[in-house]
Amino acid sequence: MNVLVPLPVILCLVGAGLSMACYRRVAAQRVLGLAALGVSLAAAVAVLVRVERDGPVAVDLGGWPAPVGITYVADLLSALLLVISLATVLCVLVFAVGQEGADASSRYFHPVYLVLTAGVAAAFLTGDLFHLFVAFELLLAASYVLITLGGRRDQVRTGMTYVVINILASTLFLAALALLYAATGTVNMAELVRKLADLPDGVRTALGVLFFVVFGLKAAIFPLFSWLPDSYPTAPAPVTAIFAGLLTKVGVYAIIRSQTMLFGGDGAPGWLILTVAGLTMVVGVLGAIAQDDMKRILSFHIVSQIGYMVLGIGLFTVSGVAGAVFFVIHQIPVKASLFLVSGMVEHATGTAALHSLGGLLRRLPVVAALFGLAALSLAGMPPLSGFPAKLGLVEAGFTADAWVVTGVSLAVSLFTLFSMNKIWAGVFWGERGGAVPSPPAGRARLLVPAQMTIGTAVLVGVTVAVALFAGPLYDLSSQAAEGLLDPAAYVQAVLGR
Image: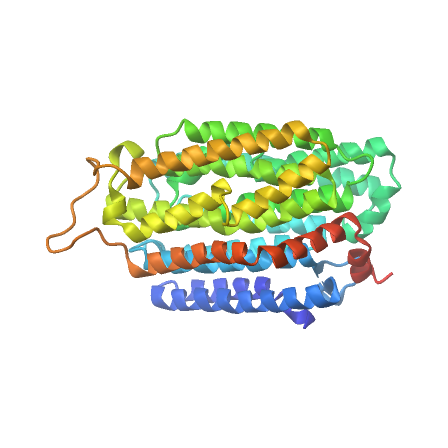
């Protein structure tokens, strides 16, 4: 069973290599990609079942024991996020295969896509902060290629901003690792749990703030988010969807892991994290309201929703961290599915600008229904997955007497609903805009390729499943939060003592 822990990383890297060898045969690349992701998802589900039953599972790569070697560790947090992430990337790949020319325009799409997935899986599973740095670089290197696929001038311009910002973040990450190693003599997370506790509170707090800034830049928290709304909308729809669903969430995962398991306690900068959470929510949703393009509205909402996750982390309670974990589980498929819907709209009409659209409810009713389900979930309307996610955070905030930031989160939810209604009114309601083409002769409505619809529908179905199984998933999130705030089982699995 232990061999299943690193299997998603291995399969994706091997699949990327084989796919590159088949770079002249797109059909073979598609089969390899779908097979690698399908088997990886099955392995991740098996690991989740094992972890839920027996506790954290650690695997020493190359036979080198921790803390000398690199260890992959699957606990409930990493296993839950791995399963939902692989399900999302599989659905997005189905969408990309169905979108005419999305994966055929470049022979490198499938290999790079699998490399990015391997980087995401490695980031969730690694028990070593330096290997986390390597995983970030792996997924970022792949994202640099994906964000400029197509070679349009606007893609290259915004892609360069994305590259420069992330290179600076990586440099800061490396400097933070050097300071941490100088203070403790290790970068193994299980060993850091013990060694950081021996440091003076001031030193531990300073290191915690430094790593919060490092991972916050990757997660696009306030005020470190300005690169995201310009970079994401210019990429192809499948690329934007996977970026929206996963890349910032890997940064949030790193914040959850480091701030709770490593730097939590009396010296934790809770007030700073809660302040940043409130500002991130407000600035993101106000930016969304001001936009007139479907993709840019959704891009600003990536920022806004990150604030909810950071809110749960800043409470440093089991209920707060559990709310943050469940919110990430809910957000990954919801954000990706919304961007897939925007890709379907753009594919059918040639634009995502609200002022040029309208009347698509009658012409693309399935697309409208998929958007409605995902949008209402994002806004937190019952009984969809966003409702229990936000309810858990609100209850945790009031219990912890964080009245101001919790009140802000409720107000932001109303503004989120307003901006989703803005998209609905501009894209699906009303009369046909000037940019919307007429259906071909003999057809009642515009058509979207079946695979695009299937990929999006399955992903929206995942969000519905999260709502249906919210109780068991929230219980698992609570167990994950307990393991983060009291990491004795994690340390035992890695160090054996």
